[in-house]
Image 1 (cartoon, rainbow, N blue to C red):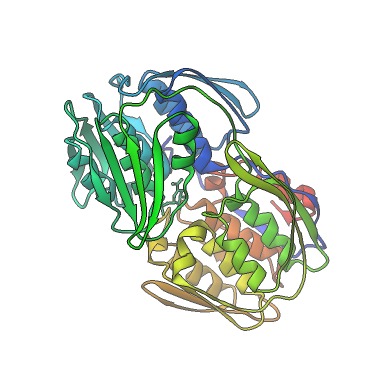
Image 2 (tube, protein in one colour):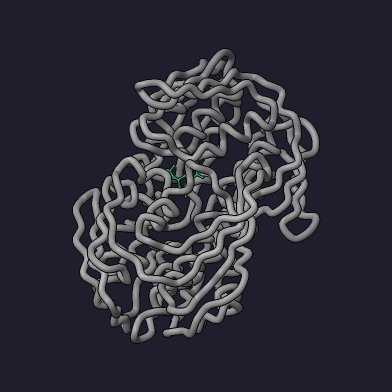
Length: 443
Ligand code: S3P
C-alpha cells in the first residue's frame, strides 16, 4: 500500500551482550511466490509461516484483485483458492504494490499472458525503480505495455491474447526478471526459456516444480538454462515458508559485533542461491554453527548459532553478489568492525534497490566515523577497532538501510538514529521487539 506515513525516527544505543533465540519471520521471496502460485493453481493452497510484512500483504491484496480468494486463518497461516493458469480476471482498480519490487515485477509477469488490462503503481521508492527490465521481455510474449518515461511506474499492461513462448537471456543477474518471464511463460503454449549467466535465487523454479509444472534447469557454459513447459495445471500445495536468511542477517550481525553475544536463529533457509553472506562471514572468521539441517517447503533449512568474535576484512568476489544481493548493507556494518578493509565487487545492482544502497550506506557510515570508498559497482568499508557513531541517518524508504544502521548503533560508541524506521514493516514487522528481547537497547 502506498502511504506517505509520518516518519518514525528510531535510535539504537550501545548494548550489553545479546542472548537468546531470534525467530525471524518467513522468507519474503518465498512468501510472494506462495501467494502468486497459489492464485494460479486450481483449488486450495495452504501456507504456513507466511511473512506478514506490508510487501507480502500488498501481494495478497493484488491476488484478490485478480480474482483469487485469499484468507488469513491464523498467524502466518493463509489459504488461497486459485483461479488456474490463465484464469486471472481484470482488476477493478489500480494494483498498488507499495514498496515491493518483487511484488510488482512478479505480478506483472503473472498477468502478461492473460487478455486483461491492469495498471500498477507503488510508493515513492518503487516509482523510481526500473521496470523496463520486466516490460521488455513481457512485450516479447505479445503483451501491450505503457510506462511512464524511463520505464517507470505507473505501468499499464494488456496481456497477450495469443501469447507466444519466449527465449530470454537476462541482461542483469536478477531473480525478479527470471521469475517474471517464467510466470508469463506459464500461460504461453510451448517452452519458455530463461538463460542467466550468474545463478540467482531459484525459489520460483523450486516452487513451480512443487506445484507440478514441467521445469528443468541445465548448467551450461553460457550459464543456467531454465526451460518451462507452458499451460500446466498447477496443483495446489501446502507450503511451509522457511525463515528469511536476509532478515536473519540483522540479529546475526548484531551478535557478531556486540561483545559477549550468542544468538540462535532457528529454521533459517540455507538455499545455496541465498547464502553468500554466510560464506563471506565464514571467510571473515565469524563463529557460525549450523545444526539440524533439514528440508521445509522444498527449501533446505537449519538452525544457525552465532557468537561474537574478532573479524577480518575480506574481498567479496563479483560472482558472489547475486547470492547476497540484499545483504550488502548489513555486511558493510559488520565490515566497519572488522580488522582491515572489506571490498565488495560487482554490486552495481544495489543502486536500483529500494534506495541507492551504495550511496545510502556510504553517506551514513561516513557520518558515523567509518571511511568508505565507492565506485559505480564496488564499495570498500575500512574497518576500525571502535566506531564513533553519533549521527542521524536517512533511510530513503529502505527497510534494510534502517535496520542496518540500528544494528550499527548497538555497537558504536555514541547512539545512532535513523530518520524513519517505518519501512522496516515491509519485511520484518517484529524487528524492534525481537531485537529488544535479545537485549538490544533500541526504540
Ligand atoms: C528478489 C530478488 C532480488 C532481491 C529482492 C527479492 C526476489 O532482486 O533484491 O529483494 O524475490 O526475486 P533482483 O532479482 O532484481 O536482484
